Image (cartoon, rainbow, N blue to C red; front, side, top):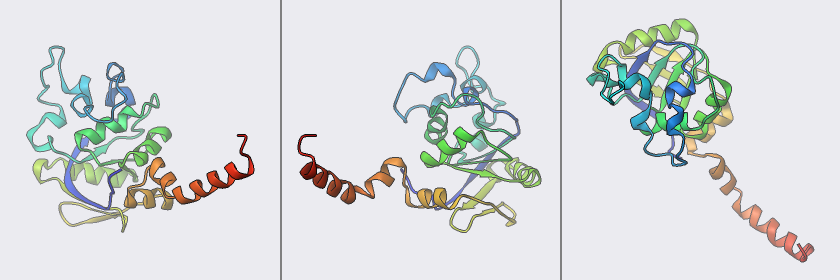
Length: 201
């Protein structure tokens, strides 16, 4: 998993509440078990019309936000089914940070496991960042995980909280497999000892 330390990028405003995982990546794209290639179908039903043409008014289709790396969203982001394809699609598109007043629990945890930083902020701070994000290509925001600070285009700063263990994992690029591999030597020693003590197993 790619490390997350500090990110400076364009923030896209999506002031909708209850954006569920089916909106993030519709069910017809869940056939794959690959983490790559889903970005083109992110928010598919909002990005494209019935003929597959881009809907110009959708935020991520606008020139200023095509390369957005930060998403400012409404309350209860990532609700609905627990599909891990949702953070996969966001990451494949290029989104590394999602900021909202609240997240669905499973989606929230899946983000950390896939290298995305979900940030919970009070409504007034989200409103401020939403306003910053409305500046188009000038909506450049910096997210500093180590110092737990968001810096807006005007230089103003907003502090945020993050679980210490989840922060450690993101800073060091550790997903569940990476955490297990840190204990590879101990696992190998256990397996050798176990084999000696119980050779019939």
